[in-house]
Image (tube, rainbow, N blue to C red; front, side, top):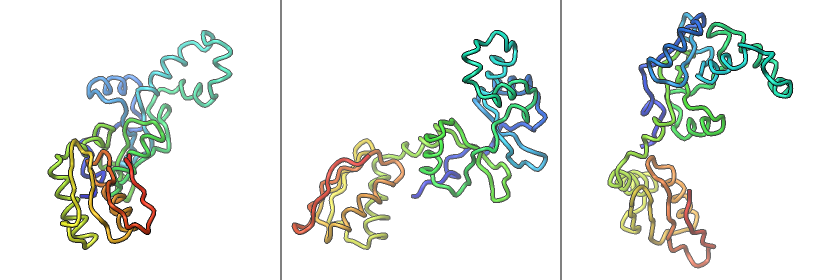
Length: 225
């Protein structure tokens, strides 16, 4: 199993058009209990994202610029102050939107979210049209796999079918998503590649490398996160 965005995304998406008003967006955020939603054009192509932070910025900055300390206005980017004057999704949205494709890996989506500090990403097809949305909690769903499922994939799909190695040469144990790998790989490269591959199995929290590497090779062992 190589988890893709399409495996964990939500296909029923709350989206707004570019002319949606501030009040409409605020009401929909409360109604659907989401923190952001994509902004789409008439062809359902994603053109931006409006978040609760965007709406809060308008509320905080647009009401009375005179009440904002001079030191703070100097720090705030002019674009943000100008954006706070907006009244529609087109005015307030962040664009271009950061998006992912259904075939992208869960790891890729997680890396984007972590790097950009966003809570959700619109999912688009090859034409740029909205087909779903993926949140942080969706990505964490891959860790719902049982230890038995993880063990079966490592032994059957990776060791046996991908590496063409007899699984009897290794002892694989999985506890709470932590994999311990023992055995004697034919080469150090094989052992390291095996550990790396197992690390990327959906649901694996960490890999404890307890392989007995060939004496002539330098052993690299430890806990991989």
